Image (cartoon, rainbow, N blue to C red; front, top):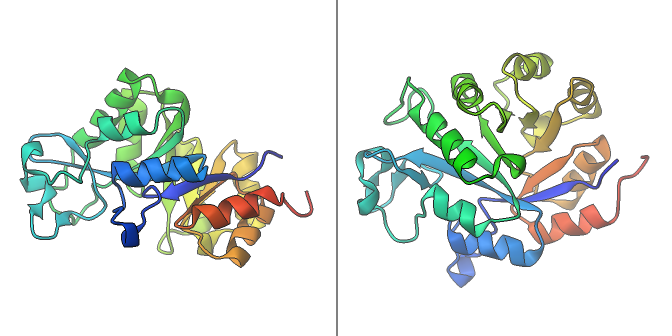
Length: 237
């Protein structure tokens, strides 16, 4: 079985050094630390640009869906720049467009825009687009079937239905919260042809646990620790 992959959660930020999450600096730092790739979040601006930011609101600036791209602060990159900064790395793009959030778009234009950009940049082989929202994943699959998609799972999603739901959506990956990870879920996913990426795993015991459960990738805030656990190999394999 291949070694567990390590993705830096929102890059590899270092607040003490002024490196914010989801910034080009955080992505460059993840590369420098040796991460296999990064996870980032993307939201749509008022004029349809794809901004890399986790929350819908930028404190002191405004709500992203109400701002033009030109109104974004300098530390918020657009997705194209983030992909360029992560050339040669795996990139997990989480689409942030959910019911109940500001600017929710039932037409899934953000998902289509992400798919189109990934295709245009020739990055389909090392990008996974993830979301909690099935309609966003379906839109990516329609726009660019060659782009891999991953269904995000948290505690409100019944893990017993997760594998079947991911398969129905045409996903190639399942992205469960660490609390949902166990050998049963991982084995079921693998039998269905799905890879598994767990989030967000930051302590040694849990990193070793998900590694030994057979997950393919871990998303972590501690790239250095995760790489150390990766290097020790899987137990019982």
